[in-house]
Image (cartoon, rainbow, N blue to C red):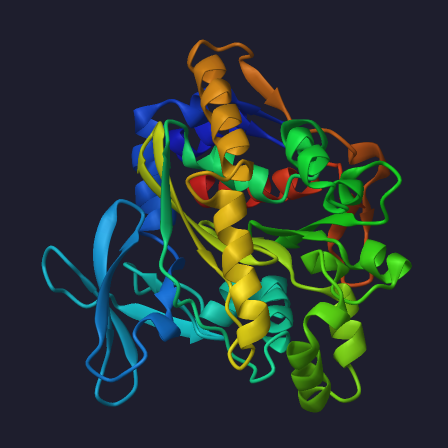
Amino acid sequence: MTDRGRRYEQLCQPTRVHGSLYTDPAVFADELSRIWFGGWVYAGHRSEVPDAGAQMRTSIGPAAVDMIHTDDDRIVLHESSSGTALPRVAEYQGFVFGSFTADVPSLEEHLGAAAGELDRLVQLSPEGELELSTGWLKHTTRANWKLLAENETDGYHPQFVHGSVFDATDSPIGALYTERSWAANRDLGGGHSELDLRPEFRRLDQPLLWFGTTEAKLPDYVSRMHAAHPATARDLLVEGSPHVMIFPNLFVAEVTVFVIQPLSVDLTVQHATAVQFKGAPDINARLLSQCIASVGPAGMLLADDSEMYERNQEGLANREPEWLDISRGVHREVVDERGLPTGHATDETSMRGFWKHYRSLMTR
C-alpha cells in the first residue's frame, strides 16, 4: 500500500472518520481523481433528451458534460470544454451514467443491489417508465459533498431536524423514523444504501400512505396501476417508492430525485426534480406540487438540511470534534437474507457502508 493509501486507512476507520476528510483540499483533489473522474457517476436521464438530436448540458462533479441523443438512439456524453466523448456511458431504467475512465466494471456491477431499487421506482409507473421533465431546482450549500451523501439515508435526523415540518403539516412520515418503526437502514454494498420503509408500510397496510394520500383521491392512477400489474398492484401501492442513495451522487427520495454536484471541498450544489410516472397525469401533478412545497424556494425540508450541513462544516473546519463517530446501532446490526448489513432505521449502517466503500477507493 502506498503512503497515500495508508493515510486514508488511518483517517477512515470502521466506526469513525477524521474531520479533515471533509475540509482538506488535497483530499478533495484525490476524490476527483478516484471517484468523480475515476468511476461511474450519474449524469442525466434519457427523458431529458427524448428525441434524436436532442442535447443538454449536465455535469459530472465540477466538470460540465453534454448529454446527446444520437440518430441511432444511443445516449452519449461529451466533455463540454473539449468535445471529447466519455469512454464509458451506460443506462439503467433510463438513468444515464458516465465515466471519464474506460477501465471500470460494468454499470450493472457498479449498481449491484441498488439496481433493484430503481426497478421498484419504475414499477410505480403504469407504463414502466419515468419522465424527469419538470425542470430542476438548484440549491448551493457551503459544505462538503459527503455530508449530503451521508444525510440522504440517515434515519436518525428527521425527528429533530424536520420536526417542525412534520408538526406543521401533521405528516405521518415522521413516525417512520422513531424507535418503534419497523423500517430498516441497509448497506447495499458499493457505497449505496437505502432506508427500507416497506416493513412499516406493510404493517400499516394502507395503499398510497407513502405519498400521504389515498386511493380515492387518485382513482385514475390506481386504475392504471391495476391494469398494468393485476397481480401485484396493491402491494406496489402499499410499499411505495424507494429511498435510496446511489454512490456517489444520485439520491431517490420516494417522490424527488436529487443529484449531488461537488464544486470544491466546501461548496456543493444539490439539484432536485420531481419524479414523474409516464402515463399517470393525476399523480404527476401532485408529485410536482409536493416537490416544490418540500424542496422549492419556500420549502422547509431542504432548508433545514442545508442549515445543518453548513453548521457541521463550520465545526469540522474548527476540528470540533476532530473525529466523527458513526457507530450508532453497530451492536444490533444484522446481515439479511441477501447478505447485506441491515440496522434499524435510526442506525448508521448506511454511513458505515458509504465509508467502507470510500476507503476501498481511496486506498487502492
